[in-house]
Length: 296
Image (cartoon, rainbow, N blue to C red; front, side):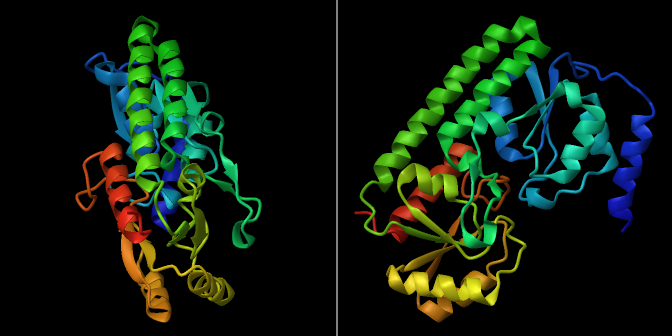
């Protein structure tokens, strides 16, 4: 209980100070705070050596239910720019509203978020846009614009970096499109509803076991529906995820006879990740999917 109360108390206390946030870190670089890994990766690629980037979600952590520590709230207060995704991490939304409303970038508009229509997530907005590299590229462009406002002397560098970032992600997108074009099974059964943007971009149908949050236990009727889907679509591989419990996926595999492979939602890079950065993990996902979806 104390972990939940203390950040709230710090937010309230800091709100009374009226402190103005500095625009640069101690070594004169622009200080950026990013809510979770894909936003931090984009900010670092666009900001280059003119910025320092602090990530609020720890490596390998689950960003959905992040609780902020007092020092992280101070980081938000002190940042020149806070990059976040609204309605994804309530604690971050609250701290940004209290301390960085004028120095924040909500990437929701640039990412062009999708609204889900599945029965268990009807009307919910899917936050997992970064699994479509083209949407992450658009977020990079938005970050460049805001960094140029915070640091006008670096505007040309930020826009050049954003163009290079877009080119990098365009190459990745082409590799994914080519590598997945020949898959004979287009049904993608995943641990939770994280791969909707990926499925839409590369021509799959996502059937998640649970909804937007990996911690939300699916109902018996949801599991029965997924079992029926697996059998009807001759799904031979179902996908657990690196930062979520595999227990339900394992139970589904036993029930259906499907094998289990692991996909990374790229919400946080850790020592357990298949690669050291976003493009590397996406390419590892590509290799996993080519085996699991029968892609000659």
